[in-house]
Image 1 (cartoon, rainbow, N blue to C red):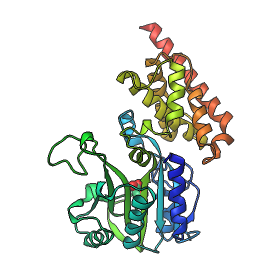
Image 2: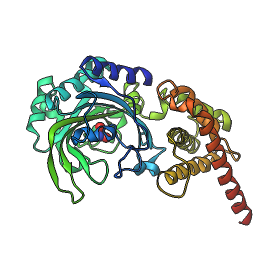
Image 3: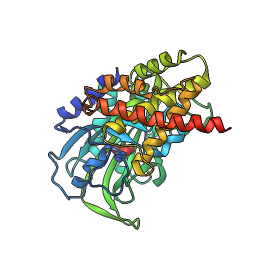
Image 4: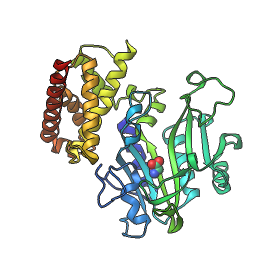
Length: 367
Ligand code: SER
């Protein structure tokens, strides 16, 4: 299945379960002082969870553009991304754990056809209710693991806000992907187990002092990383080997006159340029402009990082606008703001990259 097929299947599945599909909100959060950038699908759902606004339906589903700044330095490894798409279904005081678990299981085993024997789940320490529901759908007790707050309590997204215990689905890529230790299980960081879906049972609101109180009603907030899921389904360890990245990697390889998959140092640079090139396209498409503070600084930082890694590939002249082109071409149908703002995106990338290149060249002459 391609990225487009999985995105479409997810939304159709939840539509059939009575959800209203809503468009992704902007990467720039609206009226949310707690966040620099939209980091999860639930960001636009927060006012509904808090009872501050009425939802268009009590069952919602989306594919949300997300950006996480915490992982910038890890970009280039097999799984970490700054920009990614998150598929999610939400219940605003409607269904709760039993349905969320049963539907997640139905989707991964019947629609995505992932072999059940390769799936593990994690639950919050004392969440016996979720344990029972996973048992009901057929997950063997020995593949249900219990973890504490650090792993199985999600949120709040910013300094305060909705949060709750969670339950994750992990996929076993197979022994050949792992460390081989007898203790290797979901949670081991060797890369054998991919977390693909996080189901959050959002029943708390956490205040600035960390105090939690019950929300008006229990809610559901789930998040499935699209890029990882596409990788898992196609048996790939690297998200960069999926069709979502193929045209971008191809463009960079063409520009640099090299081939992906022959030299690890070159591949690493290509991956960083691909990831950051995609991310800056989406950031500018949502109106972020390079600056020295806030989200503008995040944009400037990753654009410069991409330009620097481009130099490692011998790309010394501005080239990133040409990396943005396949991103816009590939994603334009899903995110119309990209083709709509195409000239602005390409122009902003070019001028920022040119400025940085000049500074860099002047600096290098001084050495
Ligand atoms: N908010 C949760 C997450 O980001 C589930 O969507 O993982």
